[in-house]
Picture 1: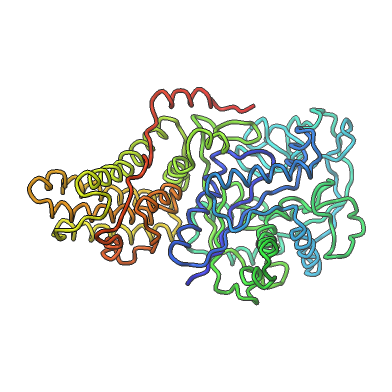
Picture 2: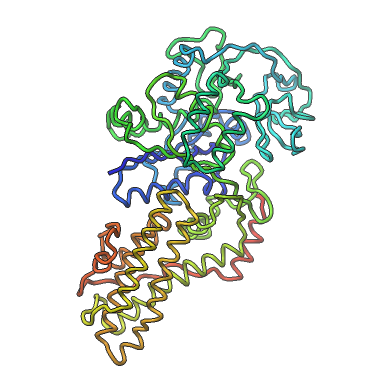
Length: 572
């Protein structure tokens, strides 16, 4: 039994996420975790809310609430929505947890001991109108690289270039809108990433199987221009992990907190500690996943994220892990995703553009969204959500190919043989050919899923569904029944077993529908079909079933038009 540690990029606390966020990290991570569990492997799937930094402060101020109260409320909202999309986290944690505070301060102490932290006195932007230093995301202006007019002080969302606030053209405070900004001296800690450049480069070079998207972004940050730069890891904020050297105070750093991009990835580890604490387990139970001296040597660790998060996960977080000099588990594979765009523009949480996760669930059950998003995952390039494509994909793949097959088979059996698997007849050449095709396709499906090739996996799964339809169409048991009812019984026996097989294979993609089909087939046998022939006899003669409700309904043209107008790209 293999052991898989799976994390998806932790979402900011500042509001409900959109479908682009979902498909760029959490949803494909859930697909992979569910698949590995279905194969009988041991999985620890972790995620959390990213609660520190300026986005949380700004969102709390806008809501008129204390930031800790706002974060607690939004964690509950995000947790509920994650359950709505059937994201099967073993634990959904919080970066503001006590576990993360202690671990972040521990790592800072270790990095200081290793000579990888440096105190730097620098000039930072101070807003006279606001009476405070402005961290990166409290400053907006025009990007000097691409001309995007709403670039933030740490990074341009348009071209993804890393920025400093002083780089921005026509910079202003996002708190007051004031342009009365000046540079004042303040002291901060810097992570000496440049000292680790060669070690990082050698480590990345060993990852021959990483997606081109992941390695190209990492190499660009390592080598472009002046190469990998040291990075500030503290901020003049009140909300965050207080700066300490392990458990000791840090003279000169009073009143400062660690930069959110330092403590957020550490939450992946702390989240496992939260998981054990929440379930009455021991420290050994989380350390066996994260410490190579405590059993994590045989763990395969996979991270899922959008391409904007790749630099921090390929460089900054590994610097923290490697630089600590302690035996922490490093990531084995990083699955990076491009962007999902929305109807000719970009999804954006901060700008309220696109369909958001709570809105999606108010329209249709999660499986409709899961199928479309995963089957159109932005892997090799950006992809685009359009209502026309969504309607066509749901109606064709889910309603016509899978749902129609289930309906035809179960209703025909009920009318001719009753609600039990019928006896009679024997399989012939057509059935043997179907078993051979399914065996080939299921092995290909497994290969794609293991390799995290999401769209190829979806395509293969759809082909597996389609193979059953083609068999049913060719066998035509409704015609066979007129002259050879026993042979029709054999055909329907095959088709009923196909429904159970489809439920098992489809569960990582569409878990609710799969559970409903298993219930209708009155089976709890979710054994993975290593032997396809055996899997197609799992429901024996005489086994009872019920005709399920409509598995997937079609989206009408009127609904599509209404939703297109209703979600024109903004949110109040």
